[in-house]
Image 1: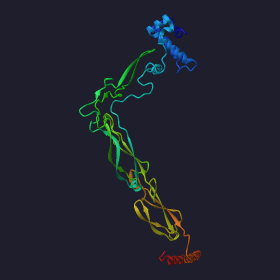
Image 2: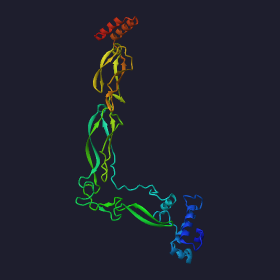
Image 3: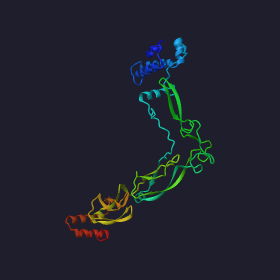
Image 4: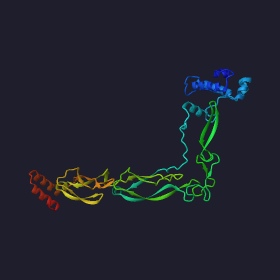
Length: 374
């Protein structure tokens, strides 16, 4: 078996400080996180095993008298899970000591904590999104328990100081390592870092200090909202813990489709079918808008797929309801698939007269056919 003194490179009469310095030097050299050479990890464990045996005066005395057999298996390099987190301490040794948890763990917050924000998805009718409305909604959220007033304790009682941590919310554990004695600080397992324990919990909230309720809220939906618009209602999220401020409620808008009208931003789009005679002669027709039915003038000679605009009949601009977009109307001209003999004769006469540029005569034929003046 290898001699522990030889492994550490010290004489058999080396004092404790010499042993420690030798171990630290070798541990730095062969630590697996530093040395990636083959066999470095085994060497590191061997160094640790030697130092653990020699660092303690009792085990060193038995080793000096009987060798490794005198240790009875007591000396052995702890694995990474032994010695209360030895690996963490070793990592801290190389990185330098500081207040930050080397594993990136969070510090338990014991003071007031802000409540969580909530999301509510709201479906809105097409026209209600354009002109705005007020809606009443019901939301489930956390509120302070009205029985215990947020303490979590049964009426007539109160929280008691945690006997495990003395109210600090933390426990300390001293650990002896090859580097010396280290103190680890962790969240108290008895009170989960709160520093207090509820002995007699409130029946209404089961000791949580908060309970879920359904609350009615009246939401003001401004004119011009669209799918994806997010409305913020301040202070209507979950209540904060330990007296902290409540979170906010965010209402996400989804606008329902309309069977006749389409929307793109502040512009409304629709289509209208007119006969070829209406397109030629012109006409006034009723169309549906967000403001109701209005008259739309079809100019004479309107071509198929012409777009006619109704100014200020679109969507109000969000935040400026006075300014509105336009309503764009696509005119589609319908051609008949069948005509009577009389209609054919009239159209043929019209075509003949039109070719002769006799507009007045053609106009008279239209009047005869439709029974009105063109």
